[in-house]
Amino acid sequence: MSPKSTPLWPYVTPGIADELFERLPGIPLSKREVRLILLSQLRLTHDAVLWDIGAGTGTIAVESGLLCPQGQIMAIERDEEVAQLIRRNCDRFGVENVQVVEGRAPDCLQNLSPSPTHACIEGGRAVTEILHAVWQVLRPGGRVVATAGNLESLYQISQTFAELPARHIEVVQSAVNRLETRGTHQVLAAVSPIFILSGEKIRG
Image 1: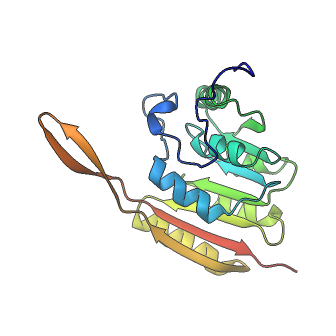
Image 2: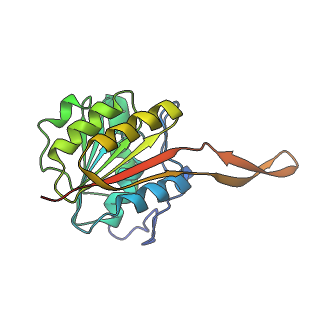
């Protein structure tokens, strides 16, 4: 994007419209309203080092990069084609502080640097293993936010947080409806609900 061109999202507030992102069939996208909850629970700082694990379309990485221009964002994605999608979405919004890491978590996390102040774990089968691995390198006082799409994952993540030296643990379930036009009618359509869990690493 040229310096003189109008930014695709010329606002200081988060909440980029879903349709502004490039998408691929079958690749998850954190819907705008859910994304706002995730970002608020992350409590990012201006110089945050965020690991976005299972970055998918790259919505969290893009929003975080815009919110924290002095921060470092690592978008971790195992699929090469999806990793390229994240790079394209970063380019669409002129985000330059996102590094896309191609690898399978938790194995690829061992050699990442710098260590995170924040981490976002967006689903995945190995979410508890990833949470443990992230916690080992998370800086004291750092925050982790993880999502669960079903009760089994909710239980696993809750149990893992309970085993860790964590404080300020919160669990939120999103419940969002959007007004949509279907045929000649306007209806309220539910955005798929998701559990959002967060916790902070105890200092010292």
